[in-house]
Image 1 (tube, one colour):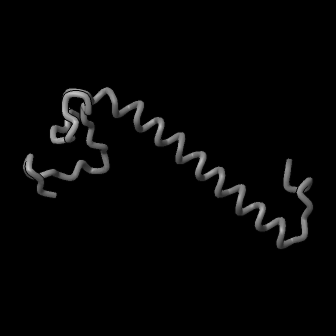
Image 2 (tube, rainbow, N blue to C red):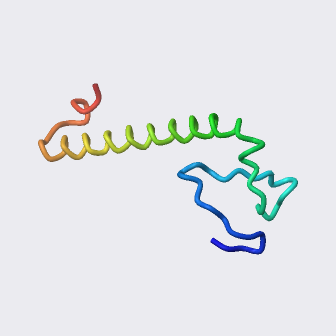
Length: 77
């Protein structure tokens, strides 16, 4: 991607980190000087993805229960 600040390179799946107080236009990626943020960021994203997987599994189980004629009390274990 090209912008006024120059070319923006892909980060191999890592997020770009900006100091929005000092750089409200998000032109300078500070991942090199603020790399400590990546660990907590990835942990938060991982926790969120686990909740999505859990929710999806619950929905699939509910769908199977309805097809087989199970009651809601049988689905809650």
